[in-house]
Length: 579
Image 1 (tube, helix red, strand yellow):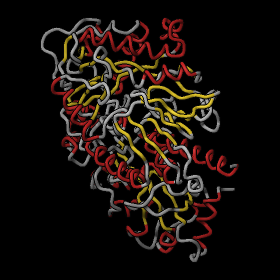
Image 2 (tube, rainbow, N blue to C red; image 1 turned 90 degrees about the vertical axis):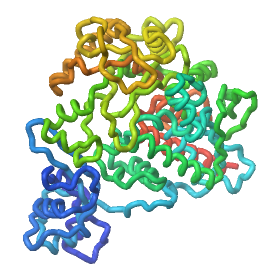
Image 3 (cartoon, rainbow, N blue to C red; image 1 turned 30 degrees about the horizontal axis):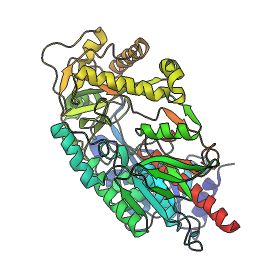
Image 4 (cartoon, rainbow, N blue to C red; image 1 turned 180 degrees about the vertical axis):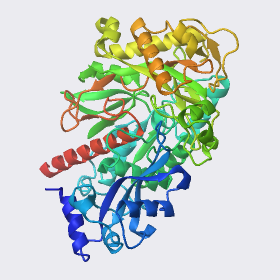
């Protein structure tokens, strides 16, 4: 027997008076590149209508755009195949049957029947499908304290606030407008503000990044759809709801975060910037609040810890207070950069590469398919003047002359073994610290990045002569990166480069430049939690997001924030019912 969705769709085909929200979902509806308006067009255009009608074998007429809803659009540039845009669409069953569609596809399980929800509208509360408010009967209840205003913290705060709970949101960094000025001072004068930089501040580390909304946790899952819908309601472009590789960019993220902040404030959330948590308040194994760096204490009903993966003093505080920490694998390596025109030509071929037009054309900007993404700039993500680590960021158009991405390999217990005796579960964190300090030394200080041509890295030789141009604005210096890491990591990076050269001929060339080092791809430790998402050893503490080891990007961190927010609401609701 088919799934219920199939039977609903077939039933509706035979009984037009049934629910008009039932649709057929079609996957892999292809439109050749020559017939498609391009990456920025998310309309149901004529070529798509014809492709859908052909797929359904509509013998009477071509379906109109009113019968088709666009779910996903992505570009397929696989080698050896005609380039095309591939769609996922929902089709009105009644309209399809009226057009003479063949129903055997649904009976054979080749179509999926789905209950279609209306598209979100801007200004509508996005997460209101929660339990009724639980705080009204207890107006003097201690607040939910959320530490960190990255995606996890923002969505946890939103979920709790929309359920009626009092929320205090603490952020050690600054709001995006002030943070932008601090980052500008770093770029122009090399002046690092240790409390407001590319890691700390409103929106977290993802604000000044590529703004990718890709995720491995299921684009069609309800939590992911809720996150994307919320971002749309806060001002993100509609294409994030349908794009195969949705992307925002720093310029859009800044505007979205301001709207998000205004919405939280309207819900009564007390947002405190420039406020750093120094320690947890713990009484008999239960977290009762937080102590601030300035000395004040805040009592809390529960604490949601969503600080991101760069707040190393927080890991140390957790270890000191008895939270169970488990080392976890992560990835380290370099940032690799090439001319964008080269990557476009490698990916699409010379003829189609002209269609990219630095982000303004019909084709999406080509990516490396390494750690994915085409950031415009390489930027310093250091939080200590004695350390250097880098990442990538882009604006919404992705119109830089450079393409860059992470070139990283996994590291595990054998790599951080030298630090286990001294640092215990934080040994992986110390491995990061040592690599970042060595990169700073090889760059000569002042956040100058050590660099090496990819060809010289393969040969084990320091780069000589004039180096390729770099998007990194604080300066670069030729240095031997081939012996910065252990031999095992270096060999793995070389094998990765050879693999990419096989997939992207021309990748290993003199114009490719490695920048040291990329170390903070994910958290080096997991803060263990139970099936109710609380710490296994500290009651009332909810580790959340990427810093706690439960996410790996903007969307997955936001989804974890939703889950933790819902867990907090459920927990405090049960407590309220018992009081």
